[in-house]
Image (cartoon, rainbow, N blue to C red):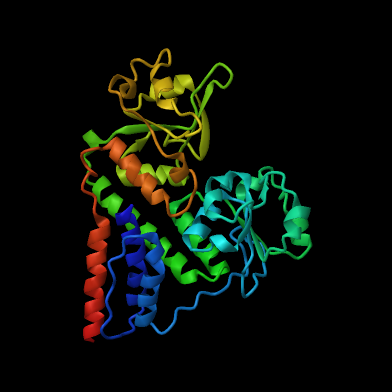
Length: 358
């Protein structure tokens, strides 16, 4: 985790250096904990006079929005957004959340109001007088937003559709930061995630074709009641995670989020199975015991692992941690010494020294 944070924070200084402005006697601190992001951002602002991030006039869905110049009260109706706002140091400004964000309730105000993201109590949300309400594309399944009455009442509702790529996640982070007066910090996280994935890809692309493993990510265990398996194909950020690692998606020839048959999953014969379902603590053991799966490579070799669903299923900068977790399960011997954080940190320091000498 420290290395991931180091990457993310070092990227803020990299961004400042890219502007070509000069300064003297500037040092980049050795950052090891998330709370120190403010200090690194301050260093970046010493290198450049000012970095102004414009307040958005459209949300990520393309809707016109009017974001207040100062945002003090936030309602977050998506757990990935809630987590990112907390990471930005804005926990005290969050006045309402969706029920799925209850995971982070211990970091928020006591007895914070919680709402169903699919069927929100808009009257109660409006009574909180939020400056902005962040909503997810998940709430608009079927094409109708359940938050329209809030929009009609003049409250700023910012829609963030579910991202299909790592680039999309980065753009979402930058959008959220720009809305809440944390544009510089959000940009640091965005650039850090991009740098992290590039480092993963450097290792993944050098894995010989004959050593590449086929991976099936399962979001449930099939049963008589629910006989299909939920997974994903290309055109998803999780598929990009596998590609960066140098692995093959068992259903990478299909598009989007998928429901596949047990027969097709067995036929795919994955070398590794990742269980993305924290709600089922013994998911890996259940899959190993499934009838008819005994000849699947992953079962024969004991390569069935439970992964942290909160990291990979909530699209924000924490997918960096999820990608590294997946990488170490899939290729235990190839990502053991992954240390991009240290390398990037040194590169940033060298860059600062060069700027200081000019």
